[in-house]
Every structure is written in structure tokens, then in C-alpha cells.
Amino acid sequence: MNTNPLRRLLSVRCVASLVRQSSGSIPSYNHGLMGKGKVKRPTLTLPFSYKPQGEILFGIHPVLLALQARKRKHFNRVFIKTNKGDNKNLEKIVQLSCEHGVEVEEVKGHVLDSLSGARPHQGVCLDTSRFPVKRLSLQYHVESLPRDQASLWLYLHNIQDPMNMGAILRTSHFLGVDQVVVPSFNSCNMTPVVSKASAGAMEVMNPLGLGPDSNSLVQLLETWKEVGGVVVGTAVEDHYSHQVHRYQINQPTLLIVGNEGFGIDSSILNLCDILLSIQPQGVDRENLVASLNVSVATGIIIHSLLSSMKKADSSQVQQAV
Image (cartoon, rainbow, N blue to C red; front, side):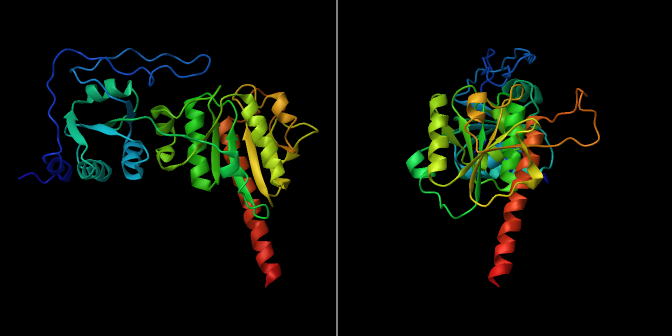
């Protein structure tokens, strides 16, 4: 008698059977990363004839949260590693797959390596449609913002590394950013690599897309100010910037964080109402490591701004009492 819950689940009818034939090709989007100096991963082929219908999502949390949230339009097939062992989250993945009529296939580890582009799949991959990103509407999303209510939106300006993008999405979701906006130009797309880097947070979020050019961002900033909001940029410490821990949110706030190497374009910085910076502590200003990764810096700034907003709300409640 089989006592392994995952093995029992995999024995039900939703498990598919594939005919192993000649090697098939796999998508290339999980291989080369955007960004200068990125190492290209080895070309891998599938050891059977299955051809992915969409993109390959990999990793336990991305796959599980994608199936739970159901934001993606199609779920084509789930691949589970043979003899993976007892794992509650893998059990949930199989259960959800069966409930939604998604076929599940047991495969060897090297098949998952091929499907994921040799990335950390944790024993599961999902052939699925692309993650949907709704287009931002100035009239619907911005002009309807309550002017007397503090809120925090985050605009990711030219973030190109998927690991940074994923980390920022994870932090934004965890800390409670009201809305994340991503451009459709000069930016990393919402790929499976980003989803894995976000620990699956991307799958349950509703990011808005902005495009198709830089003029769209200018229109967003202008509309944001028209509704009484403030535009906050991030910059290296100089005499124009304010220390982040001294700034307090008390109105709709649009925070812009910039490219890993160049920051925010000067033309966009000029449109910001205020610039924030993080002051280094205990380091030589000429030190080559006297700066922060963009995802780390973004997390610090978001936490500081949202904390200030909560303090302001608490103060108002006490005054009312």
C-alpha cells in the first residue's frame, strides 16, 4: 500500500502519459538574462516530443500561487519530479491541477532541468500562458484616487535585471505597496525568472503596465500632480536630496526607483517634487561598496515611507480622540 500522499495523488486520472520520442525544443526566454555581462545558460533540449504551448513557470511557490490565483489564462500541463517525496506544497499543486483539469506528468529531474533552463525548479514546472499585465488608465486608475488619503504607488523605471525586478515585487507585496507600475519599454518583462525571484509574489499581484514610450510616463506624472499627489524620486545623496527617514507620506505618493546602473533619467528627475536618498553609515564615501543594490534600497525606502504613513494615521486618530 502506498502511504506517500503525493504518490497517491499522482495516481489519479489527471496524470498524463507522454510518448518519449526524439528531443524537442524548449523556450529560450529562461536562458539569457537582460543586462550587461550576464552569462548565457547552456542550450538544453527536452528528452521527449512535448512542445510547450506557452512559457515554463518553475519553482514550488510560483507554480502553486499561479494555480491558486488563476490570473494566467491557460494552464497546459504540470510536470512533477518522479519520487520527489512527501511535500505538502507539491500535494497542493497536484490537487489544484486535478480540480482545474490540468494534466500532471511525472518526469525525471533532467527533464525539469531542460524545461526550466537549468534553473532551480524545486521539482515542479508548469506550462502556462504569459502573465497578464493590464494597461494603466489615467482616467480609471489615477484620476479616481482620493486626494485626502495617503497611498503609495511604485514606478519601476528601467529596471532590467529580472532578479532585481522579482525582489522588488516580493518586497512591495510583503510591505503593502498600493500599486506597482512597470513600463513596457526599456524594462524587464514579467517572466518566469521574475516570478521565481519574487518567490511567486508576482502571481498574486496586479501590476499595471505603462507604455509605449517615455511620454506616457510624463503624462502619468502630470496627471498624478493634478489630482493632488506628490512625485518622489530616488537619487544618490547630494545637497538636493532629503534623507528618507525624515520624509513622511500624507497624500497620494508616487515613488520612482531607477535603473541598476544609471538610476533615474535626468529628465524624469526634474519632474519629481522631492528626491530621497539613503545615507550610508560607517563607510568611506570613496569605498566602491558604499552603495546599495536597487532592490535593497527600494525595500528600505518603501518600509520607511509606509512606516511614516502609519505613524501619521495613528497621530490623527489620537488627536481625534
